Length: 86
Image (cartoon, rainbow, N blue to C red):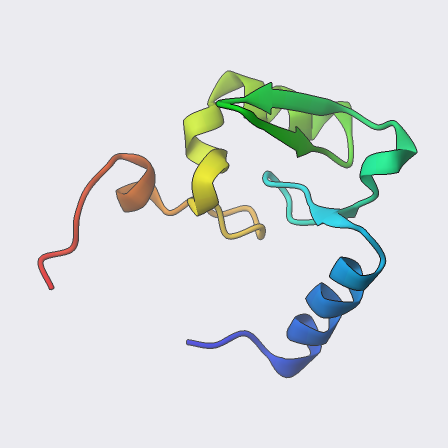
């Protein structure tokens, strides 16, 4: 299923503004704003709040590497290392 056109436009606007997505909640975050950040496996992740940063610190593998949908749901199969039979 593809993303709605409006959400694609929001992501494109965010990239143009230098924003990144909070890997926990999916909110757009300005890395230059000085908010919470966590370094994990040679990458820096930026967060909208300390609460999201704490959730990430508690289980970084669940949120790092694209396993998270940014809508409160984690792709459990991918984060557990399961492979599709396809």
